[in-house]
Image (cartoon, rainbow, N blue to C red; front, side, top):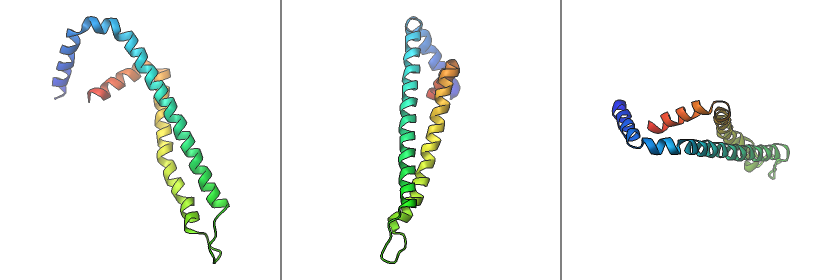
Length: 121
């Protein structure tokens, strides 16, 4: 199956060789620019989400809402644990985006080859 995909891709590239040669540098620059901006926006939103969740968790920890018996209210208890569970995916996303951004800046050729391989699969 992989050979069929590669043969089809090679046939297509042979047919459009002139177009590819003329437009490739501009397209590569646009792809790298798009990926950089996408990673930067993703990092910004991940960091904002982590900050907001940590703020809410610390607010619930240090300023709990007490019920009539002097115990923490259900919202105060859940507000301590749920944000820490939601921070994990945001943190993993931030690490993944940082790795992707480093690949773009340090080795753009490797990044483009990796991106192409992932798109073909």
